[in-house]
Amino acid sequence: MRAVRVPVVAAGGIMDGAGIAAVLALGAQAAQLGTAFIPCPESGASQVHKDALLAAREDNTATTEKFSGKPARGIANRFMREMDGRNAAQLVFPAQNSVTGKLRAASAKAGSPDFVAMWAGQALALSRALPAAELVARLEAETVEALRRTSEFVKE
Ligand SMILES: Cc1cc2nc3c(=O)[nH]c(=O)nc-3n(C[C@H](O)[C@H](O)[C@H](O)COP(=O)(O)O)c2cc1C
Image (cartoon, rainbow, N blue to C red):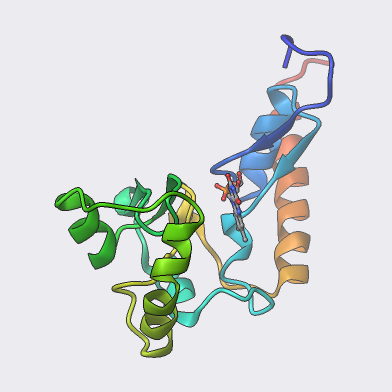
């Protein structure tokens, strides 16, 4: 944050108030959370994606280009293992995304996580299934609590 003269929005792997407080302490002006909102009832993610996020562990993600033609991180599943394992041929983005679209949709509709692109950041294990407004309220309370706790180290 000392290296630039523009506001810094920290992103990636932030899932709770402790994470937000940590990036504010590092000098960020704001935190951006993506994965944390995927399990919310308001999110359009498929149910298999939401269920997999809530059951996932820290080491369950991997990056792949095979869904869309561009690298992205998601919960490792059969599609990723088989396509990356045999280094299958792929089209350039967004053609690959079009090619896999029907398979991804059919898999989600059938309730199978095998061929769904279940995008997720590396702190996915901290996922919570809460309505978005409640999640935001909790994030705020946790951030305040974490900042208060850290301020106890400041000598008056
Ligand atoms: C609905 C959604 C769409 C996203 N689209 C993109 C994208 O097009 N390109 C990209 O680089 N990252 C994309 N991301 C990943 C975000 O950059 C990432 O979620 C963000 O940096 C926060 O990291 P986190 O998910 O670990 O909280 C997307 C994330 C979500 C939830």
